Structures are given as structure tokens and as C-alpha cells.
Length: 462
Ligand SMILES: Cc1cc2nc3c(=O)[nH]c(=O)nc-3n(C[C@H](O)[C@H](O)[C@H](O)COP(=O)(O)OP(=O)(O)OC[C@H]3O[C@@H](n4cnc5c(N)ncnc54)[C@H](O)[C@@H]3O)c2cc1C
Image (cartoon, rainbow, N blue to C red; front, side, top):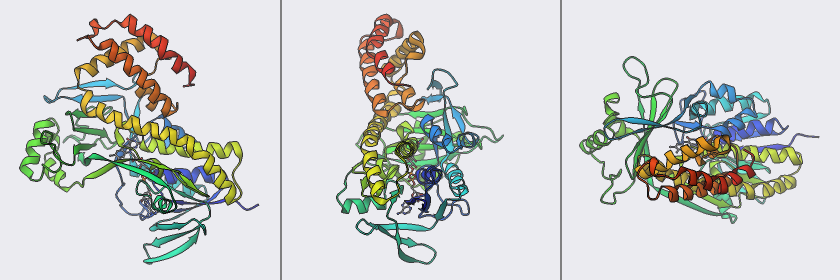
């Protein structure tokens, strides 16, 4: 019997992981990637310079034996380090202990490891510099543009998966065939600025934390890199509302210098050319994508192509990896399809349940944006957080915070969203009339969490 053949469009993190997962199940994979080979030529990493890998991503990597190799290239982050206007910072731990961490990793570095692994299977052929232009669902063919020859040609691709990111060309072709999509752009953009090492080659700030400068409607964050630099990301509204600074307001160097020195004063001493870096950095855009159906016959969308989200829970790629795992788990249960018709049935069965989960992480990511930029320094939020940690200390291993469910477990995102809303309601009620922890009735709060939250947590296997 000939091996099933699958065509993937897009060799980013999700496409290159999926290629290996399919190859390991006996599929021959042709992977078409728009950019040149990033292992041979310097190409931009794409949507972000570095990103946080957590349990869901690591679980997917473990399935192709790469979790250890990837972890070797990461910097663990045990919590958020919140910087105030005076430059003082305080660590808010993510997990129960310093053992529960998320991992900062170069996005390009991860992509290269995944491409190496895909090619090493011997079943994946990667066609770099080849861009999908459109897909013909009636004929099962794709039109691709080949950079080197400046030609377009038609390829046979009766079973095809679009892992070509948030501006997916396969999704555009599906829209012409009836796919419905809602792309909700965020009014905020971002600029990435690299914070160099100190003159003696060390990290400018605590290496094992994600740093945040929350300033109400905007914020700066910084993730550590193994070379002792940080990648800083400044999130600002695109347009001014009259009260909050925006990218539109920051047009000249003097305004930029005043703003950055005034709001993030402990950063410029380590980045003397911060104004020039700001001027050179392009503004990135963010959006939440919800679309359906993800499949049309024997074609499927996966990763950002199907479910791009805003980056504030550090889950976009982790969710994309989990989507790949979900698909191949279905192949493991039902067998690898041997005809386009069977692939069509597999895809149609796969995506609706997965979409419920990616819609949930989309909501969680939007909620976390408000938490990160607005609440992490807010006294009411800090009191609720302190109360929750006190309850967790009493209830022990049985209690998980929403953040821990998303980042340190593989429970469905929809459960994390549901349980998180109950936790939030109980914490809001318990802290409503208190100024400090001593004023919170921790016995009553623990009883309420035991009655309402512990049964929900017990019902899902963590
Ligand atoms: C500022 C920022 C911070 C982030 N931080 C995190 C984080 O901490 N943790 C996390 O999990 N996620 C994070 N994300 C999200 C993460 O970057 C994405 O979810 C992830 O890159 C999606 O992977 P993907 O392979 O689906 O798509 P992409 O990474 O967009 O890759 C798509 C690939 O397809 C190729 N391509 C595009 N069009 C075509 C075409 N027509 N034909 C052929 N090839 C094509 C592209 O060149 C690219 O290689 C962040 C995103 C941003 C913007």
C-alpha cells in the first residue's frame, strides 16, 4: 500500500511540528514555505522574536522527542516581575513553587530545530521560497509562486493543511468557498526592542522572570534570552484617546524620549539608544481570529491560520501545538486515512470540538491583556491574588489558579475559562469590603472555594 501523502502550506512552528507528527505516522509530507530556509539565510523570525513555551507546547514537543533539546535552549521564568514608576520591582510567582515555570525561547531557534527534525524523518520534503497563492477545492490542486524561478505553477495537493499563519492564503481560498471569518483587530500595536547585556555581559534584570511595566492602558514587557539579552515588547494603542499615549502621538524623538524615560525609567540606562531603536522598529498588529468551518473536503486550517489570538497569555503557539496533537491523536484512535474521502471525514470530525477550546483561549488571552497592563499593580487585584494564594496554601494540591490551569496543565482551555470565572467571582465578593488581607474572611472564602471550585477541579483530570 502506498503511504498517505499530505501537503502542508506554511513551515512556521506549527507546520514544521505537524510535518514530523504526520511523518511518524507513515505519511509522506510536502511542506511549502514562503520564506527561504532560515537555517541558511538570516530571515526575520516572523510574528515575535521570542516566546514563552509552557506545558502544552512541551507535551507536543515530547511526542517527537524534542522537549529536552528545546528546554536546553530556553530560559525559565518563574513569575512576573512588576516594575513600578520608581523602578522598584516585585516578583509575582506563577506556580506553587519555583519548579513551575514557563520557558522563554527564540521563535526562530525553535523553528530551526523543528525543521531539522522534520527533515530527519526522511518523509518530509520542504520546498522553501514557495508561496501558496490559491487552492482549487474542486480539483484538489494548488497554485504556488516559486521565488527562485519567479514562476507560478500548479501542484496536485488533494489532501492539504494550511499552517500558513494568521494571513493564511488557504483560508482566503476557503472564504471564497463559503468559510465565515471574524477577524477582530486589537486597537493596540507593539514594537520589539532588544535590551543588551550589561557592560560585564550579564542580564540587566532578574534573568528568571517575565518583566512587566504595567501603566494602565499600555505596558512594556521583557522576556530573557539565553545570550543574557532581553526582548522588550512595548504595547501601545495605535491612536490616541486624548488621555493615553499612543503610537500616533510618538512621532518625534523628543516625545519618544520623554515618554520612555518617564514611564519606564529603569530601562533606558541599559539601552542608551532606546529612541533610535524605537524609531527603527516596525509596529506589529494583533487580532483575534474566529472562523468556521476549519475544513473543506480534504483541506484543513491549523495553528494561527485557524485560531490566531492576541499574545497576552503566551499561548498562541502552545495552542497551535496542542491542535496538532489533537489531530494526530484522532489519527491514532481511528487509523491514518488512506483516501481523500477519509481525510475529509477525519478533518470534519476533528475541528468543531477543537474550535471550542481555541475560542476559549482567545477569550482568556483578551482577559489577560487587561490583567497584565492594568491590574497587576492594582491594589484590589493584589489583594485578591494574596487571598487566592492564602486559600491555595490551605487547600494544597487540590487547588489550581486559572493561570496554573492554562500554563501548567493540559486541561481543556474551556474548563480553565469556566473555573476561572467562578474563582474570580468568589474572590471579588470576598475582597469587596477589605483593604488588606487581614480584613478578608479566609475561612469563608476557603469554604466557598471548597464548595464551588474544588468539585469542578476534581471533575477534570489535571
Ligand atoms: C508579540 C507576540 C508574542 C507572542 N508570544 C507568544 C508566547 O509567548 N507563547 C506562544 O505560545 N505564542 C506566542 N505568540 C503567538 C505565536 O507567535 C503564534 O501563535 C505562532 O507563531 C503561530 O505559529 P504558526 O506556525 O501557526 O504561524 P506562523 O508562525 O505565522 O507561521 C506561518 C508560516 O507560514 C508561512 N507562510 C505564510 N503564508 C504562506 C503562504 N501563502 N505560502 C506558504 N507559506 C506561507 C510563513 O512564512 C510562516 O513560516 C506571540 C505572538 C506575538 C505577535
